[in-house]
Length: 154
Image (cartoon, rainbow, N blue to C red; front, side):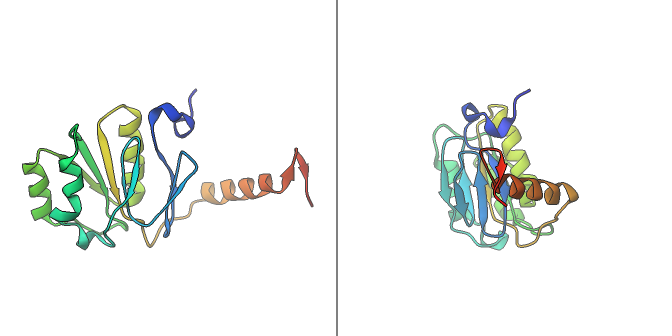
């Protein structure tokens, strides 16, 4: 079994996200919206889905080699990208996958792990769900942080 986010040969993956930004598989934290590629991450100058326009997407269609698919994470569920922008990217021969950031992160990771020529344009959500698994893993992580050489500090 391979834990995908720990396999560095797959490039940069997204481990988690918050209102502030994204934690990446290389251990780095990217603050704010990002343009992510298999080997690099850039700050992306948008704040909301309404800010996504031809200019903000120009990076993604000027790159060589051309990307096959651009995964856009619009932030919160219910946010949308203008149909004019969708048509514009179709004319540039770039497929789009548009979804809330939670789903977009998983989609980007999956396509990247498959070896597809993918990029992500991701806006941190301002709202997100917290599941029982999230709470349990946070408690486990906090408990592990309080150990030195397998002995509890407290």
